[in-house]
Length: 85
Image 1 (tube, rainbow, N blue to C red):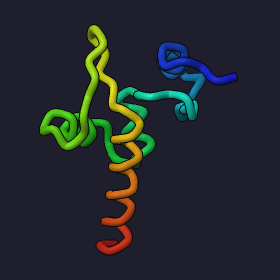
Image 2: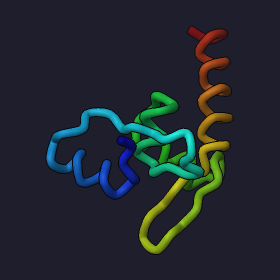
Image 3: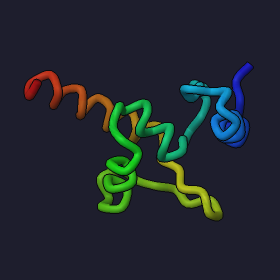
């Protein structure tokens, strides 16, 4: 069973979920989930969002990053790590 973003957040706060389960149907993820997927720190992902390196969606108080941008960033960082160690 796949949980929505709110369900995952609640489980993370309670200490039940170490890693986020991302559905292939999700079109946007939280900054924390994006950081986990890309394998960077949460603060670095917030900095990328703040400086416009990735697009963000604001839904009320929630900040979300489109999965397309997360995938592009993941590939770009993987390519950089491959050539720069």
